[in-house]
Image (cartoon, rainbow, N blue to C red; front, side):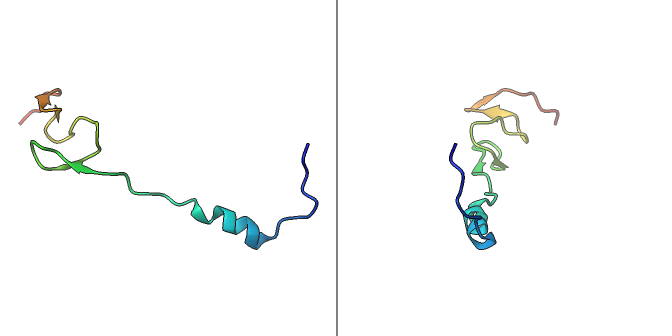
Length: 59
């Protein structure tokens, strides 16, 4: 099993971890109600997906 010969410094360890950041999910506008939603999902506002009403929403 490979074992490091010397201890990694904190600076080198933190440089490797510098790119662990959160990214904002890609959002698209719903073609029906023009609200923001996640792609490839039913719109939570109007209940439409791919031009068809999938979830009945009470008005």
